[in-house]
Image 1 (tube, rainbow over the protein chains, first blue to last red):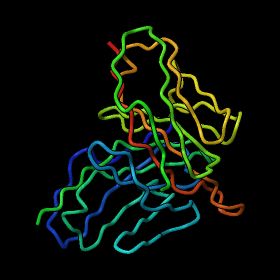
Image 2 (image 1 turned 45 degrees about the horizontal axis):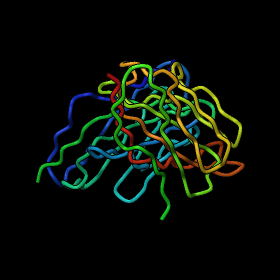
Image 3 (image 1 turned 180 degrees about the horizontal axis):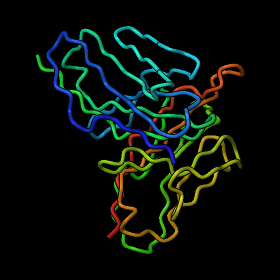
Amino acid sequence: SQKIEQNSEALNIQEGKTATLTCNYTNYSPAYLQWYRQDPGRGPVFLLLIRENEKEKRKERLKVTFDTTLKQSLFHITASQPADSATYLCALARNFNKFYFGSGTKLNVKP
Amino acid sequence: EAQVTQNPRYLITVTGKKLTVTCSQNMNHEYMSWYRQDPGLGLRQIYYSMNVEVTDKGDVPEGYKVSRKEKRNFPLILESPSPNQTSLYFCASSSPGGAASGSLDEQYFGPGTRLTVT
C-alpha cells in the first residue's frame, strides 16, 4: 500500500517565521493531496487541496506545493502565530476516494 | 450548523461483545468514510461509501463492517471486538468536487469515538 512520510519530530519555530512541513510518499502518484490541521482531542480540519496537475496552491497565509517527480508536497505557513500550533496531516487520494494519511507533524510556534 | 456527529464519544467494552458506532451528517454528502487513528500510524481508512448501498474497503477493513442504508448515516459495526481494535475512530463526509475536478471536496470529520476493548 501507499507509504506516507511526515517528519515525526516536532517543528519548533519563532512567531513571525515561515513554517515548512514536508510530506513524502512512495509508490504511485496520488490523484490529489489534502492537508489538514488537527488539534488535541479533535477531528482533523481541512486546509488545502492540490491536484496532480497543479504545482502550487495558496490560501491566505498558507501555501502548498506538489512535486510529482520528487514525490513530495511542502506545506508552508507564513508569518506564523502561536495559534498555528497544532499537528498537520497530509492525505493522499488514490484514484478518487481512497485516502492514505501521514502520521502528522506537530508544529509549535513560540511567541 | 453543518456537522458530522458520532456516538458514543467514549466506549469501553469487552472482547467479543458486538458494538456499533453511529455516524450521521447533515450536509447531504454522498461520500462517507471511517478512519482509525493510532499513535505513530496516523489515520488509516477502514471503509468508505460513495453513496447509499455503495461501500468499499479501505486500507484496514478486517474486523469491521459498515452499511449505508440512508444517505446521512454510516454506522461502523464491530461484530466481535478485540483488544487490537482499541483506537480513536473518526467518521468523515464529503462531496465530489464537480464533474471536471477529479477530486472530492474537503472531508468534514466528526469529533471522534475513543474505543477501548479489554
